[in-house]
Length: 247
Ligand code: ADE
Image (tube, rainbow, N blue to C red; front, side, top):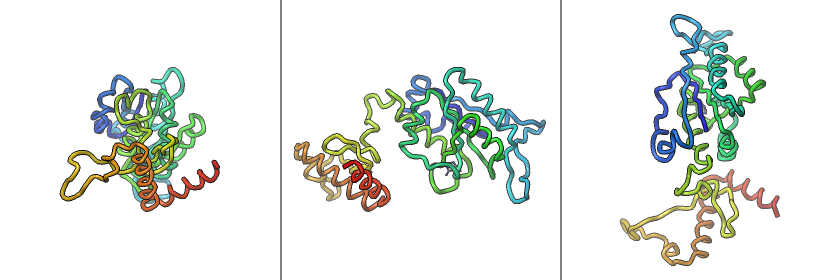
């Protein structure tokens, strides 16, 4: 998978993506390219933004500059068109379902905004002509899309075939827990423990030391249920709705 990030701060990449599993597989199972928006500036001062029509604080990145940067990124994908995303707090909320869908592509272009935003016309154009999708990683505003793009990249990479080879499967973590029948359920992950069995007067739950796999699986799903009910009642409700629908 070739991922291209369009940003004003290309030196921020690969950043954390150079570590751990993504780092080991960089250049093997996936590649990362950055495009500096400033390289597409239309003036000798290398400015990329201008004052907003209608007044107000902040600057807006000009549409022609973003268009040229996106076009140049797209030219690196001669085969099947890549998925194109724009990181913005106004986008659809990112989750594992979106990550899994993006991981089905051989290519991904991620546009990172900064300042007050990007001229709406170039966003509309790329949505209409190239299926660009706007993605938010949560209901808060960051200074720009770079950190958000790294969040998206990390979670997409976990679904790239062979990425998790010999490591914990993405199938058994929060939101992807399996019940005792092996069916995937949308609950938060149960707690994990390792040695020593007693630490600071805290013992590992005795069922985990029992060797009884059925009892362990039951305990784990019960823990997932309790944690999800308490911490994420929204997830718990949609889990129940889905279960009722499937019956
Ligand atoms: N850029 C600024 N805030 C963001 C957010 N919450 N998600 C994605 N991109 C952003």
